[in-house]
Length: 126
Image (tube, rainbow, N blue to C red):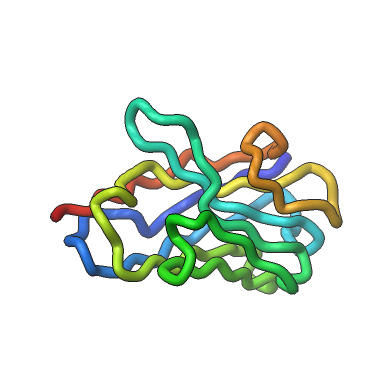
């Protein structure tokens, strides 16, 4: 069983930066694509960023492209989301997710992921 634990969220002002971490236990992340999603109150969970298992490919939602960067450190079994120039509309609970199948993904569809963290709150004030 895979456990994912997010950290690094907080309350910041517009224009600030935050770096989220997602640490995994129970299984190596090395062969598995990873992704970050977010969910704001009253809204659907949405794809933010994804990274292939080799880190050869990264994918972003249009709303965060150029501001957010996803990366991974397989030696630490951790995935990161660097968020720069934060905006109030980035306010949400951020979740990391991964697959039970190796060498596949990432995907923009939340329903395709098998393991999720508990989420970390990011609040951006104007």
